[in-house]
Length: 484
Image (tube, rainbow, N blue to C red; front, side):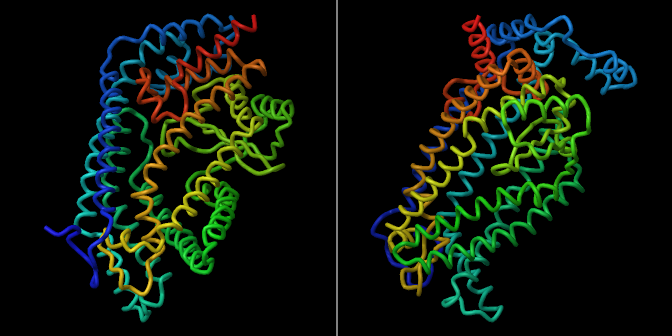
């Protein structure tokens, strides 16, 4: 059997087996990640709450003041609720240790289902990806794109940009059609089963249509421009392509929350009141240049909660999910924002942006060494006799082969640094005097979101961007003990 099965006309035997190397590397990574998933999967079968987890829950409960709990107004509001809503609201009044006891089994079942789904979907992914490589799907799709350009009156041999755009759109559609059943199952079966899905098929279809439109418009513009810049840049193409990519990255960070995110969610100014006053006071206290304070209807799609900030220089904005406001009390929401402002104060966002830009620069610079390598292209079934070696194909193949190892190593290091930053942001909030409130807020979110309660240390070290909640709570409790 010839490998790959489909080869472009004029194909020659490669001098370096890049395709075989890519498959071996992908399998090694898959087996390693599956082993980590198996370790974590076994812990999700645990029925007993870990003593360390229950200990920190009881410690958080013991820190609560006698006044902690719902106000008379909140109790009156609960009395007006009915059915499941009232049951959930009343459960939120219980001590956190008791709530953990009630939710632990549900969290384990949710995590077990997600783990099973993850292993099954990743197994299907690796099989399909390797089959497509062996069949020569990529050169076949490129030839299909060339034929599409020719039918539209273009000259594929002289128009790399148009052929690249056709290839990009065809590949996007094929990939999305394959992954759509998994996305539907995840939302409408798995998330629905555990009470988190709020999506309707109509809303999902609307989101999908917007995603296609944005990808076709913005993705095509970016890709076409990158191909032009790389061809124009000559020997220094990596420098110009990096500068252009950096500009686009900053541009997208600016326009996404203002123009794109509102296409999917409704953003409203946080109403005047005690919560808004407390957040504005916190921002002023740490000199955070807050200009806008929004709530977003995250509950339209999911019951999971979140909060984030965005903006450049003197134009900072904070967004609170409506689900967070439902799950946590005002002082806990403020404490969580104290943690988020810690990331800003310690330049974590700028640090992450800097690493991303450096990573992109080194990748483009490294790509320059194999950009015109016949072996890289012919190994995957492309002809070395074409008028040009497609940039979009070259970057894709480079990412799957030589750069793949670097990508995994950098990802591992970035996750480790992210966990370090989370501890620093927690400490910042604790130093502001929000230790008790932040601990309660984080624990409530963990319970409400049915977060992983028993992380495996190897799995967490490789995958987690945030430390396990029990580790964060223990660190804050230790910090308080040392201060005392």
